[in-house]
Amino acid sequence: MVPERSRLYPPCPAEDVTQSSSIFIRASSPLPLKSDFSINLRFKLKMFDKTLTYVKAMWCFNCFGLFKRQNPQKDKPAAIYNSNLSRELLLDDDDDFDDEGSFCNDEVTSTTSGDDSEEQSRPKRSEDILVFRVENGMICRQFPVKETDKVFRTEDENGNKMINEYVREYKIGSGSYGKVSLHRSSVDGKHYAIKAFHKSHLRKLRVGPSETAMTDVLREVFIMKMIQHPKIVNLIEVIDDPESDHFYMVLEYVEDKWVCEGSGRACSLGEETARRYLRDIVSGLMYLHAHNIVHGDIKPDNLLITRHGTVKIGDFSVSQAFEDDNDVLRRSPGTPVFTAPECILGLTYRGKASDTWAVGITLYCMILGEYPFLGDTLQDTYDRIVNNPILLPKDLNPRLKNLIEGLLSKDPKHRITLADVAADSWVIGNDGPIPEYPCWCKRKNLERKDSDES
Image 1 (tube, rainbow, N blue to C red):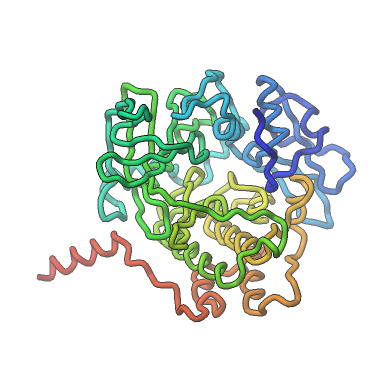
Image 2 (image 1 turned 180 degrees about the vertical axis):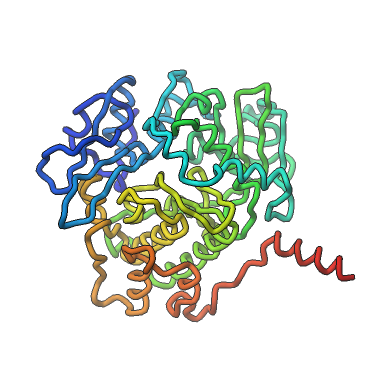
């Protein structure tokens, strides 16, 4: 079954979907189309018709490599290679998945552009950096993530499916490349969200010239093994039995999330709630950036809300790690309406600055209940992000207006930083500065220093 179209992703024009024959779209020579910013989307339909149906219905940004025609009057959105074409197949097609995350189609799917130069954007691959940190104990956690190498798929006395100690209650939704279900531990009685993956499929699904979906999943696991923060969803356990094709991530269960309906101020959160949420987002994101991690996909869908009203950042499937402050990236695998202008222009860009832009779009959504640059098509959306000024209501709080304009500066060099946001008068409000979280690696270093001095 084809999922309902998201308000976030308008459908592609029919001519763009049916012109040619590829499951991925590659940059090509400009064609003399009507718009100044024409996108030449070239498809080679080598996959079954079902995939094309999903592309039409979901208009998934992660699939597309784009080319914008040269226009001397405006900036030119250029080629961007994004990797997760079959993500919608994996996440939203109930016919292809069973409730435990098994994928039934064994076709090898490729979403690569074939350009190995894309892999040269960083001195070291994010995965290599993460493996080195984790293997050498360079983690910022009170306790390591539990690792289990045996999986037992059974049933309890009521016939409910079990994964080791975890009793399945119901499916919550979908995560990157797998299903997410609510489970209750038979040991401590607590609820946990479990992401279930099918390893054989992850290994076959190409997401880059030399990477598979397994690379993305393992990168997410390694990042979450490294970090622990009250404003970030916590990874509790990894279940990976070498004799089983199933792979599980046991995560802290967060009850709710806010969805931007895109219908205007009637669905906005109001200043007080937006301020509280923004403070949590900035706190968690500053922690990530301090540990040289770029999230890459900040948006309401990835911001979960506890029953106490605390926001926690989730979904690290497109996140990247760096050795130092050199956070230069080329590929932008995020969501269209949250994408920074410099990413669209096909330039190398700073990951932290693009995260900050996404925070600005998210704040705009929280305050005004709609997306600032959403167009009728992908092409139109990109043109607006690159060229249109941010429009804010005249009656908006002047301090809030200045903050949004600072976050959504087109030039990343002029964009305010998260430190600026944390010190902003509107953000501080009556609550004072955002408290600095004493992370575990700093605590351990201080304890070690005190021990050496004594």
